[in-house]
Every structure is written in C-alpha cells, then in structure tokens.
Figure: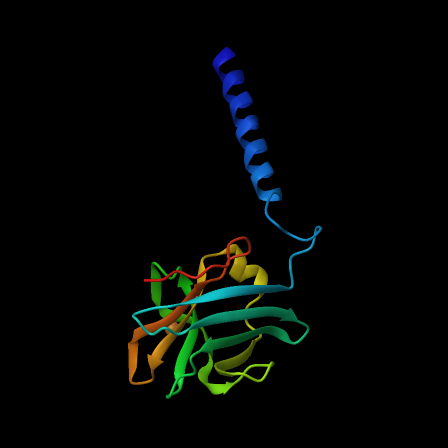
Length: 159
Ligand SMILES: [Cu+2]
C-alpha cells in the first residue's frame, strides 16, 4: 500500500508542474491569440528574409508573407509539418507564390497573401509546423527562406 501512495504523490507533483509551465506561455487572457508573426530566416545563402503574419479571421486563416529582397521569379511557398531544422518535404498547406510586390508601407518586397479555410491558427501553433519558400517552380529542392510557427518563440532557423 505504501509504495502506491508515494507513486500517486509523485504523479500529482509532476502534473502540477506541467500545468504551471503551460500557463506561463504568453497568451493574452484565456483566449487564443488571433495573430502570430513568424520570423522568416534566409536559407542556402539566399539572403531572403522577413516575416509571415498569420491572422485568424472570420473568413479563414490569412497568411501574409513579406520578404526582402524581392525575388526575380515566382517562388512557391507552403506550410509544412515539422520544423525548419527538420521539415517534412510534403507540403501540408500550399500558399500563394511569393512574387515581387510592395509591402503595406510601400517598400519593395516579395509578397504572398493566402486565405486558408482548411486549417486554424490554433492547430498550427499547437503542432510542429513551418512556413518555407522555395527558390522557384523549377528549383523546388532549394529552400530560400523558412520560419517555425510558434506562439512563444517566433524566430526562424538559419541553415
Ligand atoms: Cu514547401
């Protein structure tokens, strides 16, 4: 009887500890955040970096990429399962191509805006997902920019 009680006490302590760690995450009030900004880091010497803003709206999850310098050719972009350090090569959610355009402030950048209706910000931030950009339609194997979708640590990973 005695060892069983000790085991139960240890379990209670570990459950309390993990619950404490979860509430320490920077989440506004009791609700999930409606917007996350992901830092997109350059990969493979592309020097292409910037941000991806994910906004949960009534119409769906709006993903807006803004990268500099702007690409000369259209660049395929996707949300993949995994992290930038270890990406599942099969795209999970396709995004619109990154093309030369202007940011909201009017400066030149590679931009892409997609509204996804088949996934939520909640799902993406609770799992391991990353946004990646490929060099071109004819060179998909070369990744030029990537960022991990995270609530607490939205920093990209440089490879
Ligand atoms: Cu991809």
